[in-house]
Image 1: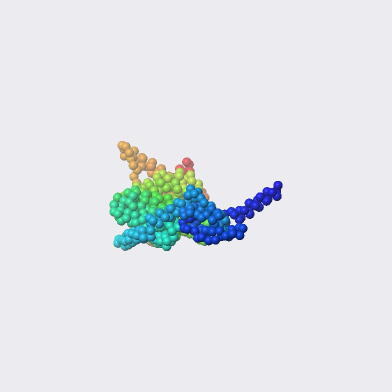
Image 2 (image 1 turned 90 degrees about the vertical axis):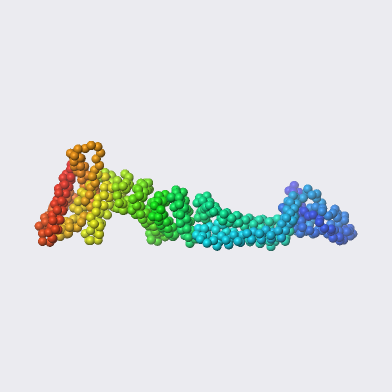
Length: 617
């Protein structure tokens, strides 16, 4: 049985090898060539030789030649369809007549389409179509490219979005390819595809050119020009220099439109959207340029037109805080090294954002009508200041804005930034917003005192520090705070060194604060006696609270219990020496020293009384 099956399989393989093949279909279009063919039993009969182009069921063509004889099914009449079996080893191994319906449809359809294309689109027609398109395209291209007064955005949009040279070159390559091979009848249908693609690309360019030229009533958001310019920013791969030129021109264009519309919100939103796109597509090394340029235009528009893009300001604030958070993570992970190129780029970018935010705060702080935006933006973003560096950044901005403002009390930064003794006391780590702002203010005062002593500061006596103090501290007395600074910071070096001349010289230098305390607001009908009692009680409460604030800020806990009495005794002795040595100063200076020493002795007595109250409570 196995042998039988093996014999059958071998027979099938041999038969398929010798007589199997692929079917082709050929129409007999010409008369055959008559020959004489030898047949078995030693006789010669008339034969017929046929040749032509045959096609398989998929439409692939093949040149075939085969011979029949008069004893076979030939001769074939003209127009007859013949199915020919072609063996890859032995050539033509069989043929037979077939009816028209027996020929695969693709053969007739493909042939028919080729003939139709040849009749409808001869080479002359293709030439005319191509010449017409070129005659329209060339003048339009020259006109658009040579337009006077075009800015960088318009020029780049025309070159990349309207008349794209690469697309046109590709279109002409396709058209030329079709022209070169158009003489081959059997592939005209296939050549029509590349030619059509080339024509469509040219037509698309013509349509966009006409739309660009006729878009006279340009709408900033919906006009054809505006849409194409937006696509240029978002989708086009511009070089760094191109993107810089385009962005500068785009900013100028948006600013002009916004100034006409009085600073519409659509301009603000579009600016942020396009900035984000440019920010993503610009390499990191050019982020600083992009940020500086954008802020320069936004701030200049405020100076020119009197309105400010608050939406971009908010966006910038959030970006800066996110970069600070990212920097904080690098520091925590130990990746803040000079060899880390990514970290160095981050530092450069962060400093750029910080400088521009600080510059904007100064700009708006000097503008009484716009300074209300500063507390607004800080209050909205305080929640994102989740690390010490971010809190420090906000604290410095707040303090700078208060000093820039003509009237600091109007800048209310909210309860998150209003400092009280309790808010400082409850934060054991001393890292919250209140501690950060308190230290920043105290550092400012101490620096100013040092500058005053060395004659660096040219500022006249001012109540600015007192007003700023009242703006950031709750229930505290700026005059008493200034006196505490004088006692425990300004004169400290003289007490430690036991140097009366140092004490004398420091007392003659103007103080940085302690000149102004705003009057309390009284509501209702109060008698003079009631007002006086209220003022006295309020002053005592504020002085006690102020001393407690100072004790925390000056870190009195670091000192032992004997520190305060020892310090005060030394200071009093030094006051006595300064008062007794009248020869070292003029009469006017003696008068000033006497007044200040008397005032400070009274402050010392007040501090001693308050310390007893604090310890008992």
